[in-house]
Image 1 (tube, rainbow, N blue to C red):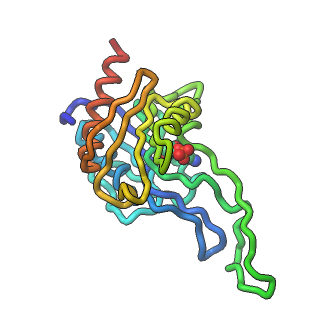
Image 2: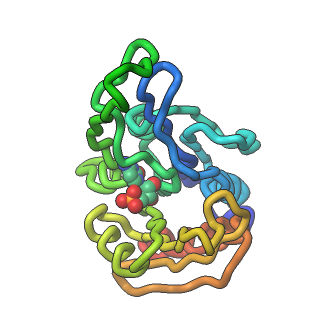
Length: 223
Ligand code: C5P
C-alpha cells in the first residue's frame, strides 16, 4: 500500500480467536493466531488510516499506533466493535467461535462417578453480519473472511450473500495449506462483481495489497 491512500479514513479490524469459557479454568478456542488480522491493522495504519483493532487472546504485540482493544469472548468482541463504530471500513478477520457454552459453571466442573459431562452449546452472535446489516452507520466497505477446508468458492460465495459483505476473502485452511498460525496466505477476493485470486503471499503482503484494493473501491464509490 501507499502511505496516504487511506488518510482520514477510519478502519476497524477484528483479529484472533475468541475464548468461550466452560468453567473458571476451561474454555473453547480455535487455532487462529491473529497474524493476518494484526497484519491488516498494521497495513491500514501504514496507509494513513485511523485504526482500531479488536482482538481476542493472541501472543502478538499490540501494533504500534493502532488503538487496540482486548476481549475474550464473541459477545465481548461484538460489544467492543459496536463501541468502536462508526468506521469507513470494517474488516472481520477474527476467528469468532460459532458457539459458546449454554451455561458457564461458576466452579470448576469436577470429575465424577457419572462419566463425562455433556456440554450444551448456543450460537454466538455473528459480528460480521451484524455490522454489515446495520440500517444506519453501516461502514462503506465490509470485508469478511471465509476460512474453509472444502468447497472454498461455494462456501465463500454463500457467505458474501448471507453476511451482506462487500468482499469475502476466501482462504483454504486445510492442514496442508499451513495458513492457521503460519506466515503465508493464498487468498481469493470475491465480490458481487467477480473474483480475483492472489498468489501465495506473506500475510503482510496480503494486508498491504488489501489496503490498495479497498482504497480503490472507496474512491471508486465516491466518483
Ligand atoms: O461463517 P464463518 O465463521 O466461516 O464466517 C467467517 C467470517 O465471519 C469471518 O470474517 C469472521 O470474522 C466473521 N464472523 C464474525 N462473527 C461470528 C462468526 C464469524 O464476525 N460469530
